[in-house]
Image 1 (spheres, one colour):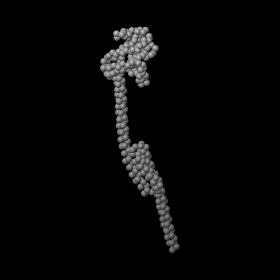
Image 2: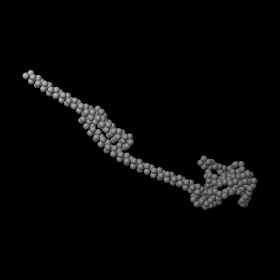
Image 3: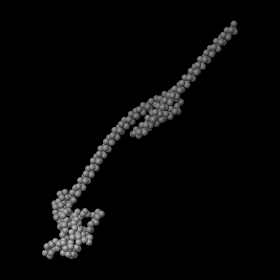
Image 4: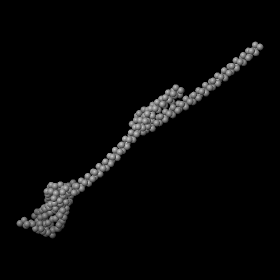
Length: 293
């Protein structure tokens, strides 16, 4: 009877131990499963924080590429994000660390939004300045074109005034003269009889011309292409003029006649055709010809 009771107690103890062992195994399995699940969640959370940080860095990269006046500040903020990404890579990924990195990310995200607002405002201001600059440049260009037009008009007007102020020499005529001992002058067309040439011309009236003394250079060339008279030479720029004599008149803006004589200087004039040119400095203003037989 005693042996039977002992066996019953032993069986009961074995059953209890078996139940406790099964419970322990079940608890250990549950703990292992929960740990794996927690680890998976932590890994996903770490990857999510890293993705968010990379997106934050990309935002700064884009803003920096626009090369605004805030580039230095943007670079400094981006470096903070890069530093946090490096720390996150090296972290163990426990709950406390991830919580700290998530908080730091939120702080950086908030700063990024604030900086981006400043960047957008700056871009709008710059766009306004560009519009103003373009308007100023357009106005400047229009003013320059207007000024250039005025310059051309003034130059044309100056040329017109200059051209209009030039004196007109006209009615150039030449006579061979035989002067008698009495002083009387007789016109002749014979070379053997002529002892001087009389050169006359008229200056037209010009109200806008400058009044005062005016010098003209008279050139007389005989049939052998010889310059008669003084044969003096004068240079005007790149041009050289050999002339027979000069005549200076006092011009007062009214029409006037001018006459001068060229002596034969004791020599007979040659037969043939003579050419007479009047120069205003280096510019030919009138010419004629005549013949002696």
